[in-house]
Length: 125
Image (cartoon, rainbow, N blue to C red; front, side, top):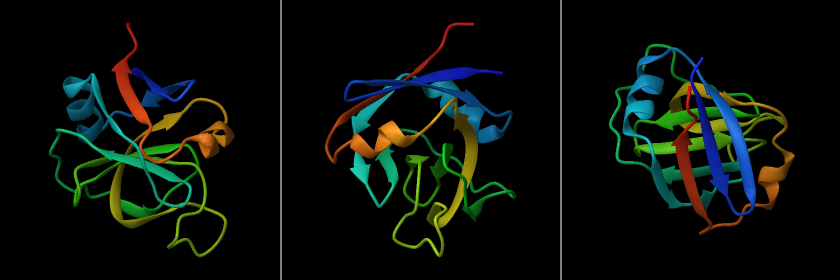
């Protein structure tokens, strides 16, 4: 399984990529960086990638899921409820392609603030 590292503020988080078309497209485009947007307990930022909505795209996601939002070409990291959640689970604004998952806990992401620099890179095999 392919792995990536997420660097944001003083955090370094490792995540696994799933075997999906979106994961492959994103992996091929790495590394990239951006500025964090925060929406409830979701971090997202624009990336220079274009992917179609996959048949498995969904709004209901799990804490720690990494997803691509085709509508906004955004890399999304979900770690808790968002403004459109109906319970304590994350929910995307519209369907997203889930392409990976964070290894370990996500509570440290609650400290990340709007405008923070984020860098996503491959982990060497």
